[in-house]
Image 1: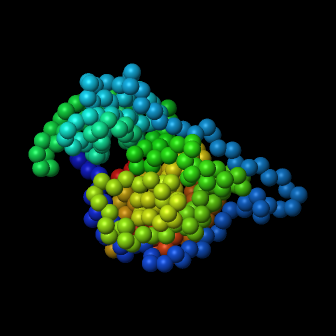
Image 2: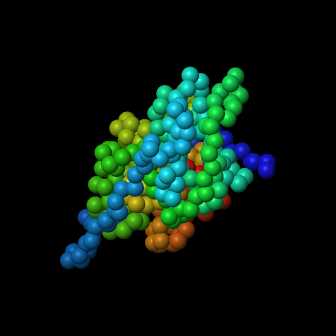
Image 3: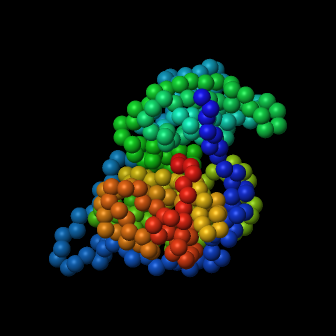
Length: 315
């Protein structure tokens, strides 16, 4: 079967394009928020939102398939992720393949474990570790197959990954819990995280012009520095919302009218009624949220009904 290949974007080119999509200053978009505990009607009982237990990832070496230098752990496939560990004196890539989709990632060759989502849902997957042989050419070094049945469709978007690294001790997780403590439901948490990131993170033009291909974000570093590029915004928001049990995608794609390659988020909740900027959250559906443009005070043409967006990759 001919596979339609979806390669990881060259972020250097991406972020050079995005030098125009993040605002120069730190103007914050007007964001109507849902009622918080502090704004609750006097005498009305407030029940704070209670997040489910933190969904985590782990590498189970004893269950992993492979050899002495390369291992792929598919033991937690039902929980929406695959883990890989490899050692080599050459550059390595890892591929997650299902049907017409091929997601290709850079992985470490020093034995560091990487985690990636099974974002294509249930079905037959192929996993390949690829080793560089010359220039930009790679050859298969190890392959395994797996039939995946997710415990639910949201599992890949509730956990950490190489694109969205965090754990229970992460500052971004603690900040999300702090924000959630004044909210009564999931939409309130989304609203609070959205407002916080818009207010405290500014677009980093210098980083956008110098970032290298293969760059991976660190949500805690973004939170501490108070600046980042679109990938940083999307990763931070995903880490904060996922840690509160809210399924959140990191999406790469194109945004009109300038056809910019960009990263943003989509979140899922069964609630409805929250309105922010110019779009309304719809119940039982994935809803788009773009913190890079909103934090920069961008024109609301970049949110709306999603007609300006073309989704390409989901992480």
